[in-house]
Image (cartoon, rainbow, N blue to C red; front, side, top):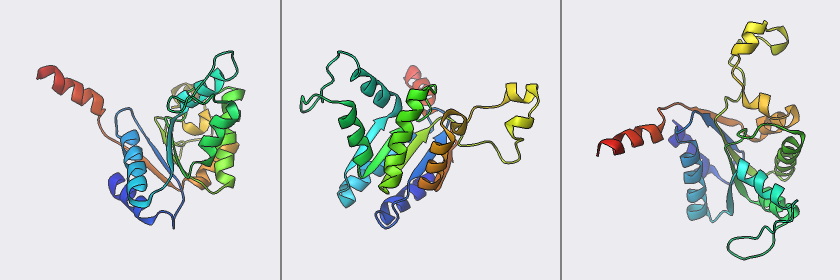
Length: 196
């Protein structure tokens, strides 16, 4: 179903420019599928695409605040916070990989909101992958009325990890939200390789 949805996504672009959110456990193929979409958009439609890991993006921005010189590996051009964020906000299609991997702080929430809000305002297509569930399962009680035991057992969701305003924007930007359920491919591949 995920592959069919991805192919349809590519076929309908740019008529349908809405984004996509892929979530699921480690090794279920979220990043692989997102990269396949980018590759096909580039090859079939000549779309300008960008792939950024969320943690790496934050670390690259943080490095511009110190005395370290952050330069583009290909061009050698010195990067600034502005130039890094401009590349991410202006890409026609962006894959933001592994969203929610970083613990939230005011700074990380501010950076994430800036990226999502700019892309939202510019009607840019964003594909997001995350290991965290998108939201609470249907029928789950609101956290305000959970017992202490229920709170202790609660699984953290992406909604818990990002701000409510960012969650709201992503909800509208990414109407296609799919959970990928599979065994961890890396563990399966590792087990196969260990017997060869």
